Length: 426
Image 1 (cartoon, helix red, strand yellow):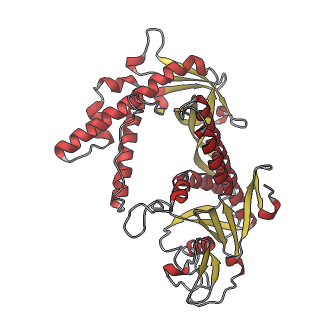
Image 2: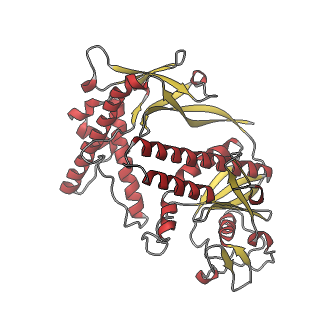
Image 3: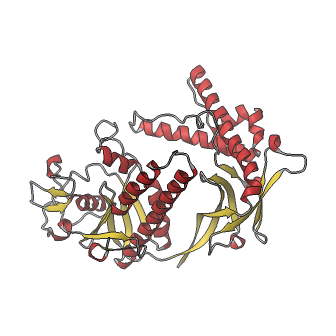
């Protein structure tokens, strides 16, 4: 075992929600207003001198603006920092050839300001772990003669004790479309296991299969999207029956759908890490998903068909990868991202690249060496080989069995776990 310092975010509910919601609403609205002021300032300077101010410049411009004092100074700084980061993300996409990327916009719901996340740094909050309370500072403009803070009573999830955490860096007030909750961002020490082995596994994310895994020792697994697609169909139908898409019932259905998806991501990431421990895998190789929505040739948005586009754009790639990374980290397993370019077109046995070899979405047949494989498994094996080249590549002999007939594991809603397809009953 080794000790490693990592960042963890612990979510807590607010027990006195009704008493503090109006105050938190005011801060959330103020954060949106400041964002919009910052966005307008960036646009004005951009038009005048062809320059978009960075975080420090933007703070200097706006620290005397009346909206800046609606929040604690550190909270206001964080709003403007987020705006600068959004512009940097846009720059990055444009540099990478994504001509469809748009700069960050204004935060508005019709004519109203939405409730934005408010971040409180060290000087903006005071934590009392004995009574599970946290004081969140108001901005100068929102202070009342008798109160300059909001006192929230919080409840963490079972197993989380903030009194044992020495370094709590930030507290975030987050609106969930139903109520406010608190996120405590902490630096914690964890025991990290030694790597279970030196083997590698490639992971390919796809349209029909959320993940395809290709192990170094010649075994493959598929995790179909069946469960998430069923949820999409069920909840979309239920929401469509609501009188108003913004009604309480529709909001509750959306939250339940999101919670089920989050549970799926947690369960799948945990399952994959457990499988890696069993198979003595030390490195998980995943495809870099940053350009998954763009065409490889011209940077334009790919057209996967009506249902394909719906599924693709509803995925939380970054979210799942983050879950996989921190769960793997606990077991001493590294997660490495590699470019996905041509991994779906190339033969994992001989390296032959040919678009026509992908006969259909689930089948790959190499016209050079005759290899027959599940298309997603072939992609996962190509991803794995970018880190650990297989001795079978470049003319070596390889059986088609595990490439063509991978194990299929489905999410069993009755047990809440993944199991072989033949063991899961509908």
